[in-house]
Length: 100
Image (cartoon, rainbow, N blue to C red; front, side, top):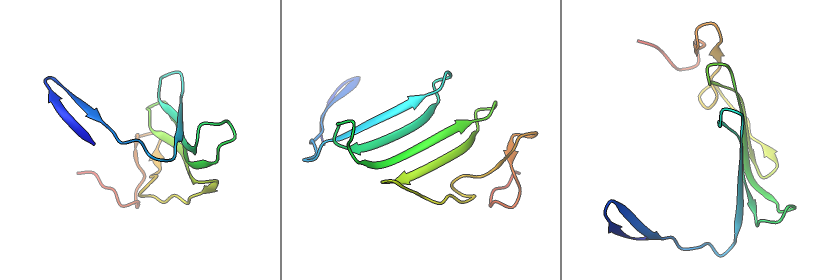
């Protein structure tokens, strides 16, 4: 990437990859991301590189999260997707997180 400073902005030239990819995201009514994906190319039948989906509780915490590499769903653990106690809006215990 080549950038030149033009205060208060910078102008950058980003090299383009030799293979074009497509990206898309979707949001809910509060403009929170509910889905993000990248594909090989921009055609409607282009193969998927990765995809993530999200949903949220009333506090804005993620309640579901799925992650795919290609079309294979990846396993999640308490570090990458901790569970939240809905009555306190805090992490549930024994997940490697603490409060002080």
